[in-house]
Length: 277
Ligand code: ARG
Image (cartoon, rainbow, N blue to C red; front, side, top):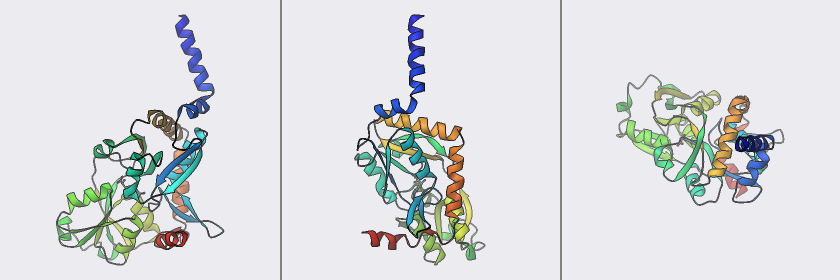
């Protein structure tokens, strides 16, 4: 009986100082800072939005969720833009605390990093130029034609599975894939469905032709293997953000910002990077 009371008191204590307690237990690569890596070519998850002063700002529901995690853990958020195919290695090497970049938690990835619970449910799509939307009956029509997918993404696996006879082209950024579909350099592309639908709002030349089935659907956050305290804290924040409605707000805000035509950097992204180098 006495033991139970003590346990109850301990539980009450943890509840009352919730996040402060968590922050002390959580270890990050730079004390007091949560460093996350993301590939901002993926609206509405992560992208650059031009603010009223004309300056590009990182935006998207992944960034809002990252901010919430940092706030709840009492940490300062630092976001490092990294090409998508480099993020896993940065997490593995301990150069960043978390990878938050619309990651699908596949069994292969789970061998080298740990995944959080899912915070978003998406789907996969095969896209073409709107002009060609009636030109194809099936994947076999893409034999020998250029079909794009982001390097290091599950969309690359989908391309290899569904269009093995196509000329599969890996590109670093999803925004480049969108550009190449629009200018006719690519004939088709595998893109996350909600991302394709988002870019199609600003670029009506982009057309979602078919849904593509995929077994590890949904997005999760990745942490270095064994950083259990951080991952548990992240799962706590994900649960809270889903429960209290903030996650839906982050998504709505991100979709609105990403639909702000002319204010979302896509093709200009490369110019932006070379300017800041
Ligand atoms: N969900 C896909 C994957 O995990 C694509 C994620 C791409 N993210 C990005 N920010 N470009 O492979």
